[in-house]
Image 1 (spheres, rainbow, N blue to C red):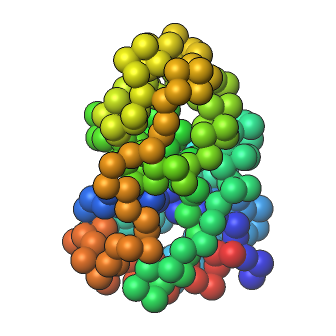
Image 2: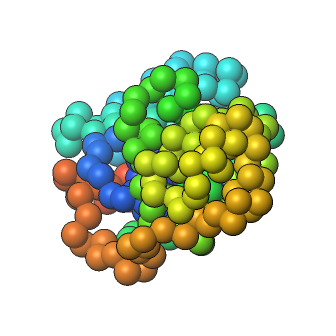
Length: 233
């Protein structure tokens, strides 16, 4: 079977780029053909996961989401069919590989998961989305591509959310600069001499993956990698 292009997003991606937090759910964006999707669903069924083809097909048709569940280990995967809008295409093209505890997979970039978290916060999912965004800002600091972030914050209308995330994440900016950002002028940071340098910045490579609690049951993540390894490209 041809490999299905994918990227891990959501809490796992923000934990890799930012501050780790526990989750039993895995969010994965996929870009399959209909035949690839059918084969993927059959693969999950063969290894004992619960998934309905009718839901997967509807998600493919509507560019929506469907679930794969492992009741034995009490976890689920949300498989999200990639949307056609410009930002969705951009973030998928910028996905990047990582290795954690011997598991290799592809995740959303730091900038893109930051933007996604701000957008999820805007539509009212939960304050935890903003906290995740702030964690990415704190950890990544100057590593972030601010020009790219500025472009999509403007395009997606995330000015106020960016200002809140910047404040919570500890950006070294003047109050005046943050106010202007909330009003839609992200270039104010440069004019005011502000910087996105942060205190206590940590890089992903400095973290000990073994100490993470990304999943309460490490076997769940291994099961996903084993089941999907032959399907995801």
